[in-house]
Image (tube, helix red, strand yellow):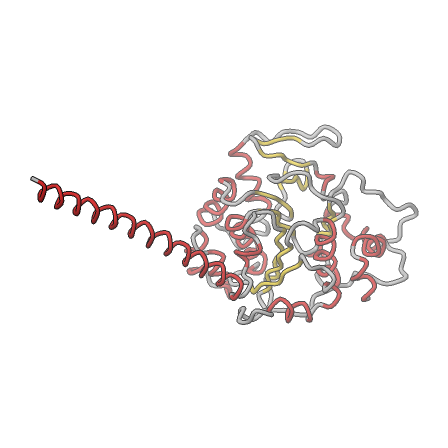
Length: 331
């Protein structure tokens, strides 16, 4: 009897020791794994997933291969960095080489010295297949022939803004938007005019269903030969599935479903048909008190005939002086 009890006690002891050893091993393994991951983050190069992980980034895109940025693009980046100092401003550029060193950001910043004072600006290579991965747009991208597309730069830009906001969330700005004051919404769409939803500025959190619907419509109803069909008209089509487009009363904003829909004055106080007014001298400068940012409609300036000229006293010169002074000084 005593021997049986000893054997039973021995087996119980082995079981307890086994459980303890298993617990200790798992805990140690997790600790080592955590240590390795922590160390790995310090050793690895900085990638968009690190910078934009909080979903509060400001995203801008350069779809062409150019590495010499015009003043308006530099102003867009600087003004965003100044207005949103607590947010990362991520600029994806197709012309940048792949990230292959820990001082990549330092090297990239040297290319754009006027932006070097702003530590919240980050430069990343734009790789379409990487951004489109995991979205309905990847299948379209693999099939489309850019050489046969009339508006390839524009339709690819339309697709990439959806993909980047789906993947990271935050704010999207076209690179001809000058930021003036913070937008007080995390999720929002903006009216270009009373019956057209803009695609130049919008904000949506990561994996928002509206963004997914936009990408599905992009592929299903693709008409790349029609200007704006994959951009503002696509936004407008999806909005109409969410709500009856509400009318604006004076300067008030409205909502579509549960998404704030901002008054055209917030970003487009000067409509596209009057875009040249930005390059004119005004007797009395507008205050734009009802606006958060200004879209300068640079796609209308196709031959770059209208530029920022120091000493011209034009409206755009005053905007540069006030909202992107470092870029202005570099002129």
